[in-house]
Length: 348
Image (cartoon, rainbow, N blue to C red; front, top):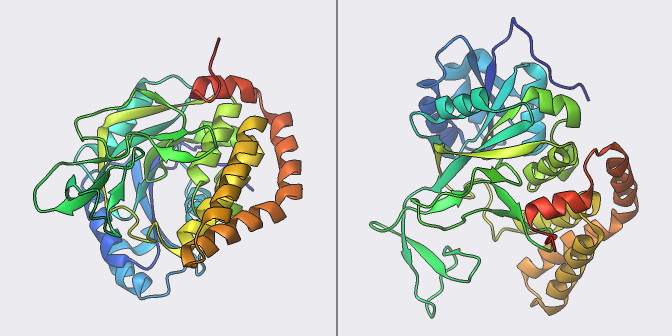
């Protein structure tokens, strides 16, 4: 896999948007970005990930050479990697196609990168959920409610609160990658340092990718940003949150969080990434917690997706353990140190 590098003849910053079967949302996103990246130091590329609809035909007239049509769907990470390989830059800004950037989104991310030291590899934006929300009654759950970590539920409404989608990625004791500040009031802002970046809105430095590599394409979808954040941490890099860089995100517009595709890949990849990178206690908790869910789940489509993801991860365990050993040899910072930094291991 060729690594990214910068060149004085190429744009300093490349903005990357990945499309799959949703030209309308992608066009909305690009229109907002185009007003921000008109300078010579910026370029924008839309990667079509093998859309099965007429996305390429609809996007080509406006984008021209800025559209990279892959012809197959290799997943989000593969789409971003294709853009990086096609157009090298010093920095890469990733934007979900179902998000709309606030007017100074690009400027705030690049300004943060200008100020930061070299050991800051990524700058993660502030993602806010599209629309307004009100608390949902506990005894009146609806399938499209948004559920917080404490079990409280929020529902879309014409009037209500603006809620946070993400201020970066964090980990729990079972290796679950989670959005920090999920469903918090919009005025709340997480700290400047966070374990991981959100692939939905972030700036990545090419010099860090030179060290650790690009997105892992074998994951296909979900946990790609968490996995890359692990590799960055293993090489001593950190992630910084930039609250002034705001994206308004239509959450799970490409695949719903209750879909078979989501549940399968989310379950499988959570275990795989934990095996690759996490400390042994975290790996054990990840496997056992999922096993309990498999045993206790009802026999429906959702449970079948979780079971399939779980057993797919178990089948991959021999090769994933070999990969774990390779990552261990390459790392400059150990798992215990990273666990302490992320709060998975408490200092005495």
